[in-house]
Length: 398
Image (cartoon, rainbow, N blue to C red; front, top):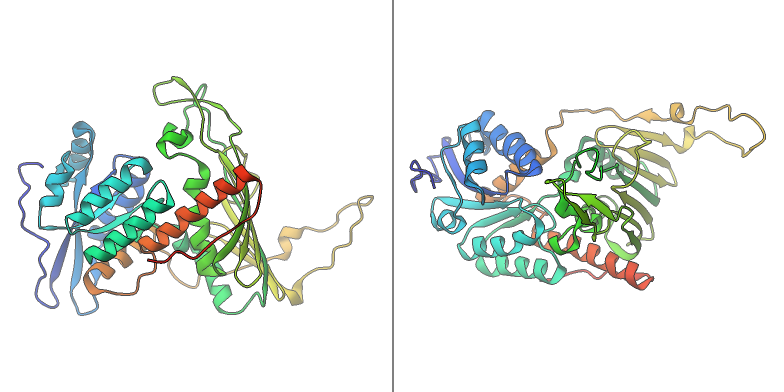
């Protein structure tokens, strides 16, 4: 660690005062770890004066940066005025003042680091997927339970304004009986030859834990579960549409991981969900993620921020006539769902809940078992694609 790294801090202040919680953050030199987790979450929470604990006191996160490249980690620490950073994870984990370990590394590096953090008695929070396979992800959940530490996995999509509005509609009974859900996600990721790719090359190598199913199916699992019900069956087709890409050094490589996944999910209760996920699709919709829900009483289309509805009583009566002009502006027939409140950054909102959970034992559903469910769904989707058949999705248990 840097010379300013003492073991002080992380102690609880008197009621109504400031309580600091020191958070080791590993993998924050990457795009997601840097922008969303460090800058827009932990540092943003500090800038707002911490998290209100409800007794007049506030919880103030204090980041400790961890990474393999000293020049990059050090530069990041200096850029944001962070006193503590290190390239030695074990030294950081040995510091009794560090209470929480966060991991946003590449998937293959995550599980061993989380195991070391749990063994050191730290509460753990991580990006998804929690591990490269289901057995390892479930093992992490059991390890945390046995060690008596609290764990969490990032489930940021639940905190997006568009999906929060969608949840409001579900809770209010707007849809009646939900019949189907259709999800479209993705965009064109450049191959890296004549334009730089906007995603890291490891995403397209199976040996490095890449693949869009591994990346996105954990999201679809918790979104469907929390809004509409658990997934009980899956039939999927995974594809590698772009077989050759160029890495960060400009060298060509074989893409061995799936860059597109097409799936049908059967939900508990009978609803059917179809999700197309692709890094080889050009966007012709209002957002990179769009989810349409159709029910007996109404329908909704939600993106990252917006949500529009059409109730049964205002549904038009189209007639199929391919020989005549359309004559209807179908998009104009939908009504906008109002914000009815302020929406914070999705990652920051979940960080606040997790840190409150760590110090106050508040409500928390995004635990490591939830993370294992997401890994399981991705694993079953790969099997379904390889075997060409529908597979049942069991409910994991500790």
